[in-house]
View 1 (tube, helix red, strand yellow):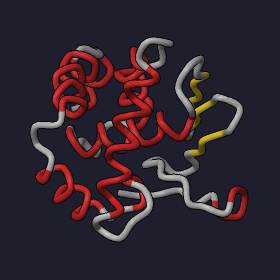
View 2: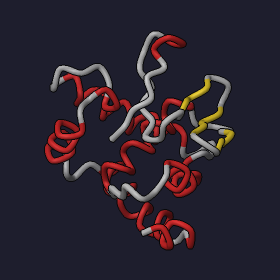
View 3: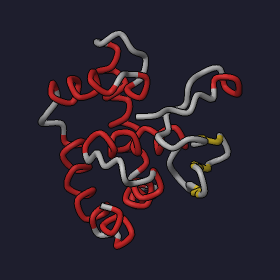
View 4: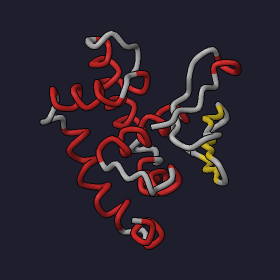
Length: 144
């Protein structure tokens, strides 16, 4: 898993899996060759969702864009609060591992964290919806 360190811009690393991936505070999530404008989700929340989706369904052949497209349904006014709560829950659990945020954790520790909360409704819903959201994309399936 590769990460883009934007510490020089924000003072904190921004997790993205593609080289050149960046979360822009104006409501955009961008990667190498793609960008997505967000209407309701905070860009950091979308970045967390993309990393979480990669953790749940890891496919090295897929770019972040495929994961972002699968998660676009969460960028709605009624979904954003649930996403914020779910990410806050993961970030709070990360504190128990000595990290401020879920996205700051190494991949092996993120797996351990998810195993400690297997019945989490947020994760269960995300797993279910990613099956169709991710594998329902012809481009994603062709890349696998």
